[in-house]
Amino acid sequence: LLVAQLDLRFGSRPFLPGESALLIVRVDEPATVDRISLQLPEGVVETAPLVRSPAEREVVARLETRLVGRSTILVNDGTASISKEIVTGVGLERISTQRLRGEWLERWLDPGEDELPQAGPVSSILILYHGRPLALGPVTTTWLPAYFALTLVAAIILKPFVGAEF
Image (cartoon, rainbow, N blue to C red; front, side, top):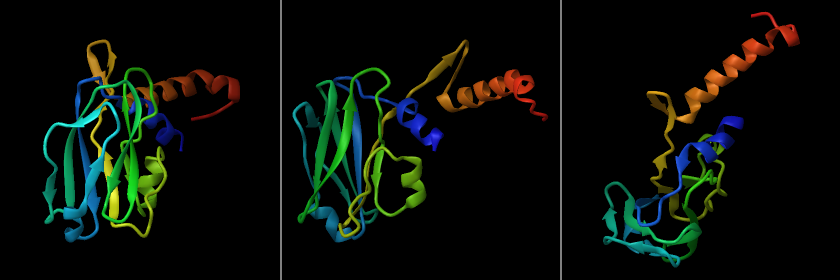
């Protein structure tokens, strides 16, 4: 649970103003692909037409964010609207890369937003954020190896104080 919460802060970085993003909407039925539309907030614009793939049951949108902050994109499926948060700015913002339905393990690993409605045709909404690199001297990695290394070092240092044997 701790790793999932840490990944919300350190796993991805917010988009910078003017940077492009891909939004991928996955649906249950191929026919639903034609009914998907987006309602974008101020500061988020579509830079290309929606790409609809009934064979893969996906709709892909290329977006550009222009204003700093949190915004909500609405995905309309013809019957209801579903929200997905997009984050633009700098700093250690909490970022949820996807919003899912069902898949309890995936939702447990990405707990940033509520589960999608069970009755709706949309099974997931994903925004492809850039990873947040961590430079440790000449090596660039993600936060996870650094976290495990620091945890191991802390365990070795604290070993005599807690009476642990390993």
